[in-house]
Structures are given as C-alpha cells and as structure tokens.
Image (tube, rainbow, N blue to C red):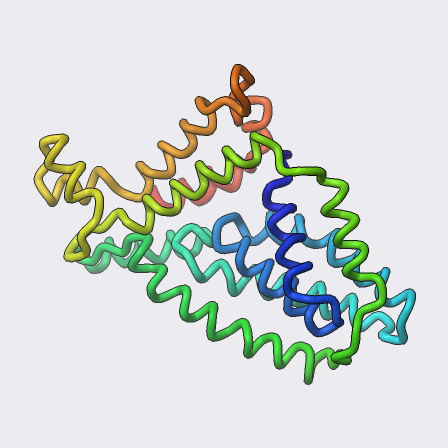
Length: 258
C-alpha cells in the first residue's frame, strides 16, 4: 500500500488538536472525509488501529477509562457512515438510489455534482451535531489536554517517512478524477461534456449518455495501470495489487445494477 490515505488521515488528526474532545472530532471528520471517496468499510478498517492506539496511550496517562476508546471507535464508525452520504461514490447504496431514480423517472439525471450539492450539506450539518451528542452526552469527555495521543500520531507520521513520488502521482490521478466528476455537467448544467461531445461528433443526448461518471472512473483506473510510479519505474498499479480489490463485493453490487 502506498499509505497516501493513511498519511492524509494522520495529518488531519494532528491538525485538529490533541485534547480528548478534539481527537474525537478529528476521528469523526477524518473518517467522514475519507469515506466520501473510498468505501466506508475500508475507511473504518484503516482508522481502527490508529484509534485504538491513540485511545490506549491516552487512557494509560489519564482517568478517562474505557469510555475514550468507545468514543473514538463510535466516531470512526459513525463518521464513515455520514461521510458516505457526501458523494455519489461514497457508498454503494447511493448508486443504487440513482439507478432506481433514473428507472422510475427517466428524464432525471443525477450526476456527481448534483449529488454533491445535496449530500455535502447533509454531511456538514450532521458532523457537528454528532460531535456534540457524542462528546457531551453519550460519552462525555473533558476539554483538557490529551496525554500522549498527539505524540503517538506524530510518531506514526514520522514512520511513514517523506511523501514518495508514487503517492504524489496517485493523489494527482485522484484529484483529476474528482475534478472531472464535479465539472462533467449534464442536463441543464454546463460542463466539459459540452466541449468534448461535439468534438467527438455526439449530440447532447448521446454525450450525456456515453460521457458519464463511469467513463471517468474507468479512465482513472486505466491511468493507474499506465502512469509510472517514478521516471522509468513500474506502473502505479499492477494486477498483483489489483487482485486485493474486493471484487466479490463489486460484482454483487454490479449484478444488482444489472
């Protein structure tokens, strides 16, 4: 694994502070932010060992007891669920909803940007509410300084070393993919399909049908197999790594769409 998502998570946690409440907020926000772009399960599995390590280090030097561990684990899980609402690719049920909406109401087209304008405000609204409920009522935490949690996070970040060339290139592929999704357009919303469609000789209806979000995702996947990890190096992704993708889950949801 390149560790890019782990690096982003740890930096976000350090940025948000070191008190018990701020650490809880950090795991809530980090989990939601990552879950907007990768699966809820993958986000939770990646943050789980970090949350347990931070909680144990803090509880060893404080009187918080097991409730701090409970709070961080709940924030990680709930944050992933809420963050999955934010984007069209955040969780498979979003795609199922869009597919059903298009089947039941044929003129309706829900693209990445349309979903984002609705889903992102929901995430922004729910996160502070969840944070207040979690740290004030369900699992009350003090507002004082933490005891070793931030130090452990900084050690985790130092162990990752400096950002490598392959991490930067993966991030750039991801950034371009996200921008293409957001600026695609479609329907009454202008976007790059209004330029690329006529260039390919497609009328607006066909451009909206064939130049969809799936095409962007496939192009991003191909780019990972083509772009080298460094000058003269191997590709960012090869089949040995691709075999670790949970294909069974993808085929399950793909069969549901079909």
